Length: 233
Image (tube, rainbow, N blue to C red; front, side):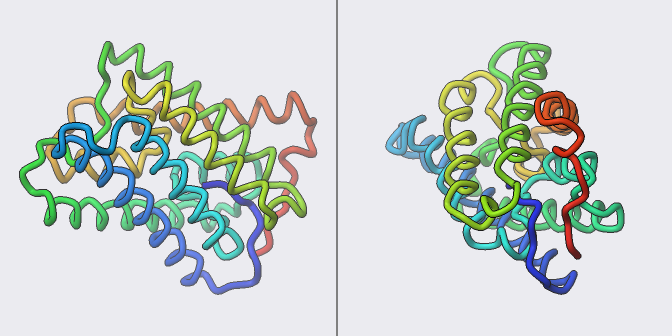
């Protein structure tokens, strides 16, 4: 979910890595939500938040040097706005992420078909409240990603820990209100598979707005060097 660096790989390897990593994120994260519901809270809210944070960290360490481990269309758009991703890769990356997420939700449905939401993100309060919350959550996540995806830190221990920790932290305090999605692919897949589409627009739009705001915040705090082209394809 957030490295700009990639070692020399083919396009298909990068796209498969994004699909695989996003599959892991959605399967583990939404699976934890479903299991928690079906077992009357055995996983717990803290356990669900940790699941999301840990799987993100694991996927960064697994495919960060292949695809950058975006795992998230909003993050991909953020990197594109920051000039760290070529325009030619924008749609293939997002398509790969959505494909991986949909496959994960199909599998969750096959395993837990009776569950009404399959882990879809739904606002607990008003749509406006959750929209603002998702924008701010994604802004903080993308700002962290842009900050740690710089130079040697991309392949070290910093990136996975920092990004995974932010995801887990935001899920801990904001999950009960907005679902703490921060990721259009993570929200789209279970919503489509469960038919819970009424609030989907919120989770598609808000993370993209937040990612764009993070690019501006990075430029304000780090200068134009924050968004210099650094990607090798």
